Image 1 (cartoon, rainbow, N blue to C red):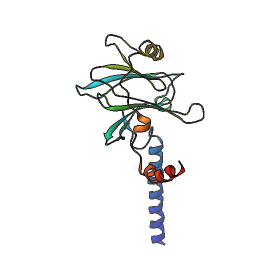
Image 2: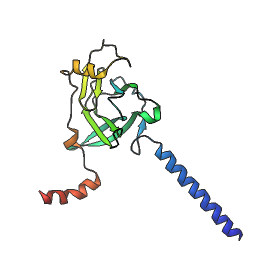
Image 3: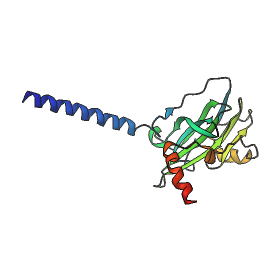
Image 4: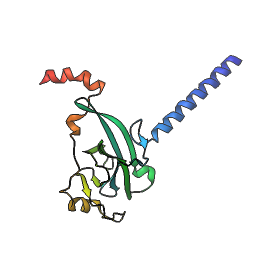
Length: 191
């Protein structure tokens, strides 16, 4: 009888730990392994401004990639802002990131009831400032231009749309995952 009671207590503890793990991971914004934003402090930094409002909704991430042969592998996924967790719809974000790296502004939006993923790839240059609009791109802005949460980044983007940040091809350049490599013979046999 005593052994049965000890086994039952052990099972309760295990269930409690498993439930706690599910709760913690459910509250983590974005994919597993996502890091919380910490400003890059190196001298080779660049700044990108993004905005969450009625027009720009969703979880906002910056994703860094590393070149690996002929393709790019995901290196870091950095969480910037999220409507639900931060308790509001109006956020203005200034993010200091490492320059001369392959970056993607990554927005995951489910405000319409469907999950929509939008990404735009860019390579920032050291000492420069940018405005990023996930469905349009990233543009360089002048150093002397003062930007605040009162500004409309869409208007700033439009004004400087001829100064596009250096781009890279995220769609065709991403390295295949192990699942993609397994599926490749099946996909190529259909063509």
